[in-house]
Every structure is written in C-alpha cells, then in structure tokens.
Image (cartoon, rainbow, N blue to C red; front, side, top):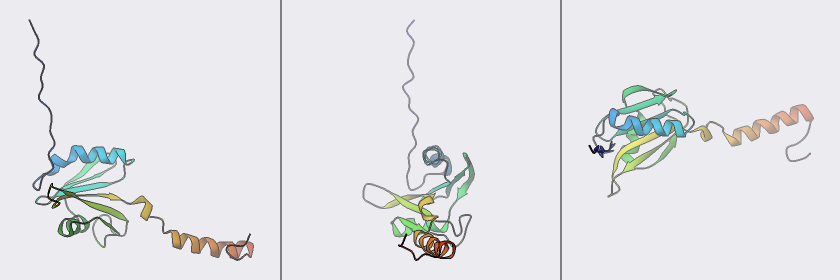
Length: 139
C-alpha cells in the first residue's frame, strides 16, 4: 500500500486586513532574529500584535507610530510620546504592496537610538576634564 504524502503548506499572508493571528508567527520570527527585542506589527485595517520576552502580550495592538507610518507610508525613527514605548527609541517601517501602498507596519525598539552619541561624547569630555584636568582631544 502506497502512502500518500500531504503536500498542503501552511501560509501566512500579510494583507491590508491581516489579523494579529496572521501576523504573530512572522513577528515571533523577527523577535527571535533580533535577539528578542520587543516588536510590534499591525495591518492597515486591523490592530495587530505586540511581542516581548518570547510571547505575544497583546493581540489587539496599535500604537501612534504604527498608525503614523501607515498614514505617511514612510519609515520613522522616533521616541513615541505615548503608549508602552513612550520615550524609548523605535524604528517603524511600512509593509508595502506591489504598487507601493502601505498595507501594514512593523516596529522594533531601536537599540542604536538608546545611546545619544553626542550627549555621550559631551559627558565623556566633561568627566575627563574633572578627573584628569585635561581638555578633550589632548592626551
């Protein structure tokens, strides 16, 4: 007796009306790839997911930056003024269809934006002046 092989494939389609359940498997993958940084996503027409610590913690998530990215169809690097990531640098980019329209948005916490390089350099120079009595740039 010959065994038949199941050739059906799982599919995850990202569309303007994707639900949190549609987005979650792909976003869990992003979360793991990014060293478990918090990630968020939503489609244009429906709230999405918020993932932290390896778990989906919100299946009806939206945020001001996700919504702005959908409206402006552009990538943003900002510190949200409200929501669970208030004051924390985030990067949010649109997911676009074949015609370039924003159909969804994906966001991550921006670890590169946590460090203000200019501020760090100014503080470092001031500390060096105080501790070593030296001007910055002179060793």
